[in-house]
Length: 381
Image 1: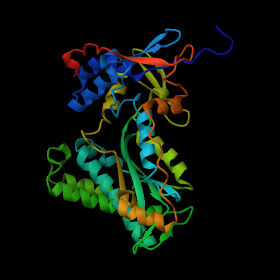
Image 2: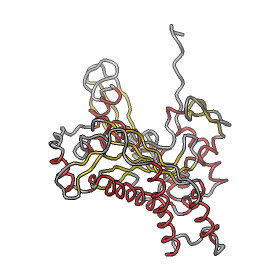
Image 3: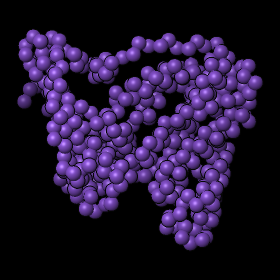
Image 4: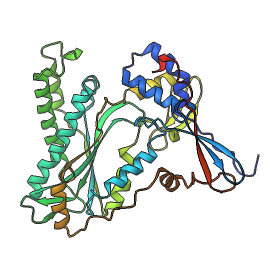
């Protein structure tokens, strides 16, 4: 072995899917969307999706590159999508301090959220935005801006729906004439926000229940089931977290980018993979070990409904007109539009690798299309 330590072994979540998806399907009933996600992950950057061959114009070296699946749940497809999203947000983000606020559903509501994902997740978005708007109005007499991102997992891949909100440290006054700034180290009282969040969410759930949106949920077959659940969670303190502000918009975007396109489990967190156990990193240097099928079962719990938007904007960030007024109030010009970057440029910025150059000699390469390989058997679609 060369001097120094041995190269660190890298693992691919797609290999776990290929090896254990069939076993998962014999023990777990998967929905169409869940199956589609697993198939896309299996095929991502393989000959099944086609691609191209990089042919060096100098030394003749050839290197195949396969297409990505672009599924938003795929661990390998988020880096370029994240950078593209951040570029688009530069024109929207105000150059003011921002706060990070997290709204979390209590554990007692997780089974209902798993049963009625689209309905409960939409309510969670609506209530989080409404809570922030109410406090901006009452405490600042202003409209704040917020970008909200839904996550449904813990670091152990357990089901844990919560929303990360990046919120302006202040807002446009109700008359639209000035910027009302919040304190640098304090947005709104966390305990008071938690109480309002709980009350608004309970009211929204009651309306949804009366309108029949939870029909078929086993716990509500008992006519007193919903009332019993509502009473129990009304007595609990709901977790709400708020972190002090980021001073500049550029730092906000870098920070927000960590959350927007994150998936439940990235390849970089895989520590060890065998036929009977997968070990992955969790928090604070700790790890968890589970059977591969258990890992896949947890992973598919976080597949979002078709067409569901997990990133949303509220207040100033949802209104181009108010955003223009807010920018005028803080004396800030719109950021200069950057020249659109190609995927080759983004890849170079992210990894340092120039895909337009030969890996061996550095000369220019010509990209020649590859024929699409035969798709996997019908059971995989």
